[in-house]
Image (cartoon, rainbow, N blue to C red; front, side, top):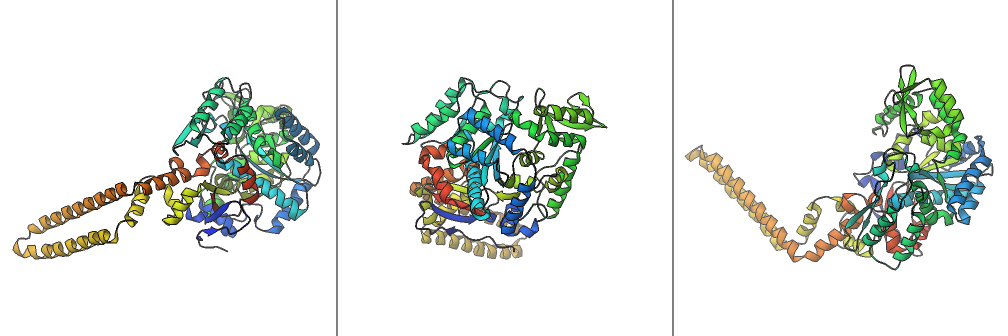
Length: 557
């Protein structure tokens, strides 16, 4: 049943260590409306997804489907174990990976691009949601359940992954950027190797961060993961594993050539029916649009949902009855044969990646961000085409972490959280206006009323004397209104000067919640929060952050 956006609700759990305030995501203009329908009006989008994640029966069916699907679990566990050996994964992560050998074991999967120093905060929120759901599955479905983090690193979009943003001691955003690595923008990220310059970049990160009691420990962990000679994707995987491996998160480097033979048949089938995946996704996109939601992926009619990685990442397109890779022409049969024999020479695009993922893993649920939720709604027919069970989709936890000063400011002045996103000073001006003495504001309103009344009488009277004077009178009224607005602006400016403390409090809260005008979870790196609050923050969020659909949580620390 549809519901109206609710007001904020404060967590009242006396045993909790986090102060939590929930805000309905439908209040936020930057959140896709699809997220609201998915959480509060699932009937509007059912048929596009495998089931409603709020219904117990949907979870039971997802478990049954995943357990019945044949897959080479033994080989998968070998691949995972080899990756974990290479990264020296913690025991809890290794034990979790071994559980996947059990024919009854299922997986809750999430993932993200291999961003420098761990990427933005939502990366951690995705992993925490997956771990919580895996725990819930063990408890409610009575089956072994493992949380998987899929490291996506076969893209060559270097600009997407090379930087991270933190706040300095003055709450000003500072962006730290890796210099171009050899092969950047041409090779997949997984093939890029960190060189000696990464040490300088870590030093820049250290200089940008405010010094705290946790800084040395956090930077030591960063340096242990991000050092010369290590692959960029492996560094990211090691960092995520450092944070959440002790809780049983299994990190999977999806570009690993050893895993490709397990999905060679998916690649071959895509090449044997070129364009079918894109066509099915387009049809579902039309269905999504008919429900009032813009499709996330619009494929070209000639597109194939695979890339060639031989030797660099290039798209594959239909050209008549042939397939083109750059200027090279191939038959679909030849490329399908190559995919079966050398699957490491291919990589799935955004539409095929979930099929590859759920061919490898017994996935019952994928933890998705808002944009992912949209394109996954275009894939039900694609799953059916490949004979792979479509998992449930669960939106990741969404949160903004604020210090107590920012939370007190919002509460004291009753500032709606979303108003902090305003890029100009309009929200601050409204707040300052509200703080003006009532007599000043009342006097200005009365002056405006008296001017309109008096000049209105003049405008009516003048035509009887000389009709040409009416225009001059209206011009005079406009000038008087302009001067009154100018005076009002000067009053606001005086209020700003008088209450500079209020201005600083507003800017401080704004820089935390919406650095550079962007939602915090999308902009600030995980490392910023670990430096501020320590590694214990991970444990707190894992134990206490709600993962309720349709809620954004303001977390006071």
